[in-house]
Amino acid sequence: MRPVNNGTVFIAVLKKTMSQAFVKEEEEQWLHEIQPTVYALIIYLTRQNNGVRVNEKSNAVDHTTGRSVHEMSNGLSYTHNDEGKWQIVL
Image 1 (cartoon, rainbow, N blue to C red):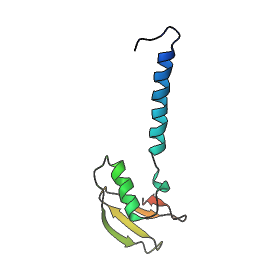
Image 2 (spheres, helix red, strand yellow):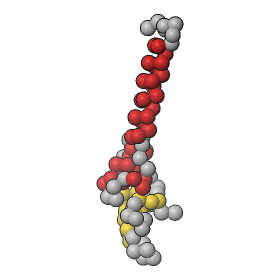
Image 3 (cartoon, rainbow, N blue to C red):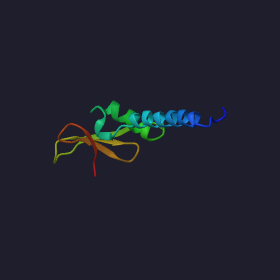
C-alpha cells in the first residue's frame, strides 16, 4: 500500500493496531476476578505461567481462620478472603 497524501492509509493502520490492543487488555483477568473454584485457580495460574501447568500440591485448613489453604506448584499458597475471592497467603 502506498500512503495517500491525506494520510488515510496511516489512520486505517493506526485504528487497527489500537483496537487490537484494547481486545488484548480485556482478556486479562485479576486473581480476585476468577471463579472461587480450585479448577478455575489452576486454569488462571497456568495462563499466568505462560501455559506451563500449575497444580495443587496440597491443601489444609488454617486453624486460626478456618479457611482452606491451597499450596500450588508455583510456590505460592492461596485461600479465599471474606468475600469468597481468591487471595495469596502471605
